[in-house]
Image: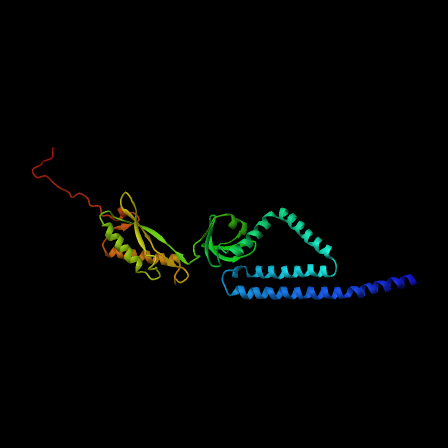
Length: 290
């Protein structure tokens, strides 16, 4: 019985001698735990002021929070004298990460690609992009995939690794777009006059930028008409209309200008030409044989 009391007394003394380290470790862990939350919120407030990292705001907040908390756990273990446990935890975490990397290769690729996209920022929310054969507007950016909404209202979630590996076209990064269309005008209409009319009609439409200037070029000489191509610029960030509506307005303006000038035009001007028949004639004094 005396042996039991001696053992309890020794354990109690050991606990009392160890308790300062334990209390210090708990306080340290609590400080890092709270600091992780505070730093995450501060990062959120700072990133909300700009557009660059707003799409990945939640991911960056969680990353900063849990990095600090994990550092607090390792420091608490070191204070309590469990440095070997902390080192083993780091080593085990590395091994687990390697194993999971091989087991879930695609998930790992998407995660790393999401981190790279978060910092490189090749596109923002609302940008019109093209990746592979898919074109649409960016609706959300996550650490695993990018939510893209196509023109036919289809929601597509593209893995980050796919976007990271393929060519990426961003049509609205600076807001400038250059729509174009073609129109056929008959050969008997002077090309210089056609070009001047089309340029004047295009530049007179609201939301068409004065700089860069709208231009018209001869695309080709087709069999029955001359094909002209109209180029103009718009700023999607400040335009009151989308690219389709503005293109329609420009095409209508060009149609009116050419019609008022009396020019023959259509996609195939042969359909707009008048075909005149040879008038009937007779020869006087000619008598048909009977």
